[in-house]
Length: 381
Image (cartoon, rainbow, N blue to C red; front, side, top):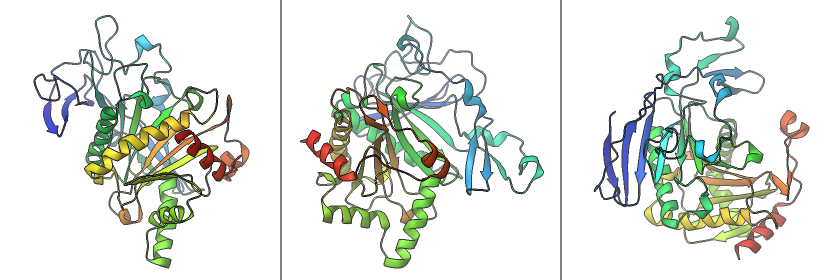
């Protein structure tokens, strides 16, 4: 096991390795670890084979998109009981988990079943599928990490103390910086999926961080639109969108010192809200201390508002997606913003992506952005 400690403000970072060579990082914000009075020197005693990935990427010539083929994910853990969760702390009364410690604050580790991995580069792959130039083939390099928000399996993000939310923001920023430095990475994506209805396979409060070796389709489309906007106006598209929403005010649901939340004028989902900094910021790592402080409260309030959106529903399934500017080329065309949305269209009913959306990519929303904004303002009041 190798380890090193570093301290930033009120958060202590300790990096170590798991039995199969994957990295695990403790981010402590409570004693005795945050001050260094105690250190994380636990060894992962599980008998695991060295971590390897067979992920590959195949180019879809019909859409111009890369498709990741990650067959090793087929057998990943699926909805284990709480006392068998691989994200729980390791304790004598249950099997060893991904986290050797008996308790923790926030933990990040490389996914055991990654879609993308740096070890994928060790494969011997041809450059084309079946020798056909129409189908370029490449290893699925990059990195996929899991971030555990709390050791309590019954917790949720909305139940966290503001100090813990602030720590998580610092962790997102730290991982964004680290993953952006990996050669070949073009974008870092922090996100949380919550709810069995959308396919969550582990109920422990956690999120994920992807480092893509290409621009995902949504980012690619946004950058194309932003480039056209710059050529036409000389201004950044996402900054102009924020300014336009503020001028209108009709769909603005939070108007704070550093952050603005609004329902986009062409929202796709039955519940959707975007959150953006007033200042031009490329990614989470560029946020100032005051911006991070305010974000902790605003972000948690928005999550609580989504939970309160439907009467009689305690926990609304959602996806919280942090869109960050690309790494390297075209970085100036991106801008940090959160897309928070739910597929639930009414209590007990989900919006499924059927023929028009899934086959044609033609979106149809069953409500209006203005109605979404009205309800969010109501529950935020």
